[in-house]
Length: 252
View 1 (spheres, rainbow, N blue to C red):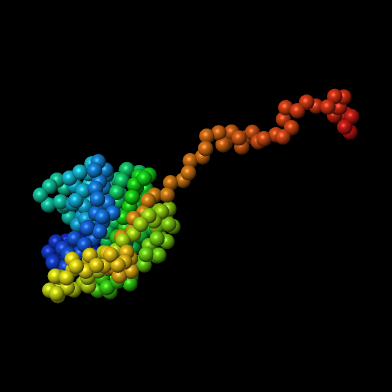
View 2: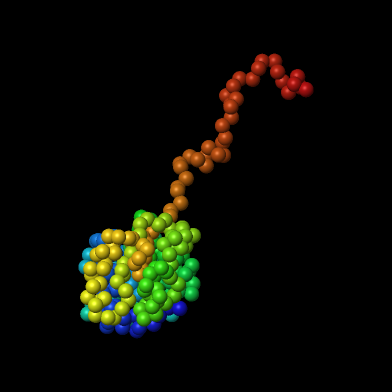
């Protein structure tokens, strides 16, 4: 079940722990995708905490929020780019998206297959999708005090298998949120140090969330002339002269 947009906004923009989580995940994403100049960037779920760095240089940025969650205007102080949509029906042209960020969009959905089908539809050939989900072996998935404690957490292998089932090709992965999901001052102050250490030690096992980049599997185009060769198969004796004096009656 999707969380309410008001609860998500409260966590990410009104609590210190939420701002720390926002910063940690966004910095990890920017190491994978440092810019999106001239590209179309789409976020689904509640991806707005991660999209702001692309507003300046991207050709367009669209923040899609499912109806079960609700929508809020974003970004504050600028022209709104967020829109309400159905999980399996996005107001986005097919094969038009260069970068797709999915945060709180898969693990909380009651119809994850429909979400992934739409991801597959809108992603352009050569584009990239980034799926950010709670790590089932991490601490954040075990605490319901944050948005990562709701829905279905994943292991890296489970997420890769689900994406492959929907014709995505996993490319690379990373992890974030190595500090515990605690509001205690000691852990809040230590979060930056723990993120630096955790990012050097592991890319998937200890973090609170998994970031998995995937590309769209595009079927290979048939080579020119192949259909014509099939219609006219090779004849070994084609063009060979018939033996003299042999007719159909003689062969009987």
